[in-house]
Image 1 (cartoon, helix red, strand yellow):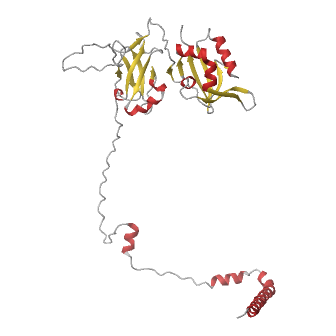
Image 2 (cartoon, helix red, strand yellow; image 1 turned 135 degrees about the vertical axis):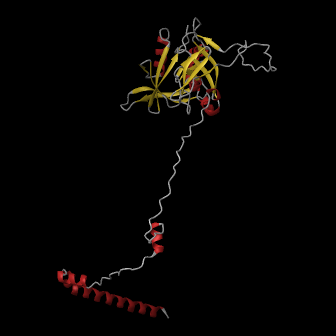
Length: 343
């Protein structure tokens, strides 16, 4: 079949389709007035009544297999009373309490700074080292110093420091019916070093150790550590050597270990100094300064620049020994306290 024959065939098919479409449109327009007329109620009723309704006849037999499938049991149709149901015996579930771990199995007291007569003195504190279930708490420096009223880290938050005495640290269990536990500090030799002395059974060590590593508060010189020491959560005792080094080299520290810029509030006013970089392991980092912190005020004095903050501290260092620094960190304000070395 050549091209001309195909073209002729397509034309004939197209004319046939066009003719059918024209006839369909003509017939629809012719019947349109009749189609638009609404159906009468009699015609609607007649159509509905012409539908044949099939009524299901009554069943005389009961499909027992179906009854068992639906109800899950076989019914006795003989008229005999059913047997009584078996008695259900319920066992009381006993609450399993979590095993109680002794404080001595979670931490050891390294040394104590205690008052002679007042076991709840607010200046008493104990340095501890965690292990066992609390081993991860050693990563946070603030957790390793305990004051009276402090609680142990998670998950042992129910254990609280009741008292700190020269004999040891007294722990109580809040909300638990347990006896208090007392832990004494490690033993030290005359050089201040821990020692383990192996002796035969029934013998005594040749080099007796001290009773405990305790520093007493009564009639004693004030604590003046050489290096800065954390004494609580967000609270530091500045060391004598640290303070002297910062006083002589603060310019080098600012240029080497810190980067900062002015911080502005929503209205565009300067409301603090923002730390954009802090060198890990530097003096600012060891004193709790983090990247992103906004230093807002020192002892209520607003900080608008680094130089203004330095001048404020220098001009008040002779009359002030406690520095309360307000810092905004990730949208929340926290307070850090620094104590100058005592005279």
